[in-house]
Image 1 (cartoon, rainbow, N blue to C red):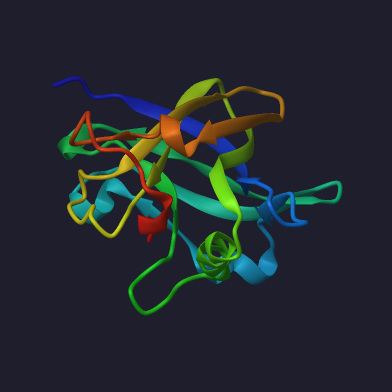
Image 2 (image 1 turned 90 degrees about the vertical axis):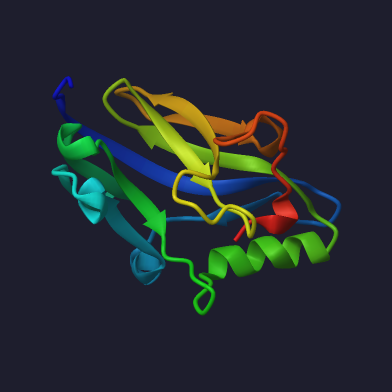
Length: 175
């Protein structure tokens, strides 16, 4: 087995792209102090891995963002660190309430838009639905985060399911 150790940093701002049938343009969820409890850091240590990292809330100019930094190792069948929304059956962050409310109000959500900066590596956005319970089952989209801030748009129609080539992401099922 090849042992790789990689240090990286990613900066993330999040918004969802909406097709507007009302007066709103986007559902925007800026990373800010009040949202800290809606997000959590997770690494492969939950499954015996040895990767290390952390997430920091930082501010540059007038923009707040999450900074994900760490050393990623594939030892012990690991190999990831991530910033994950702290969603459970009992706790739904405001972000997810707004997504479901937008759908009810006639807005047709089209995808995810991130403002990112990183180290030239490939990153993944993973979305779970009510029908993706196993850790290896999710919808994903990849992107590259370069040295400068850039905007990445990921239409929901382009998300792929990790366990099936035929299943399409239904935004009504996002949890």
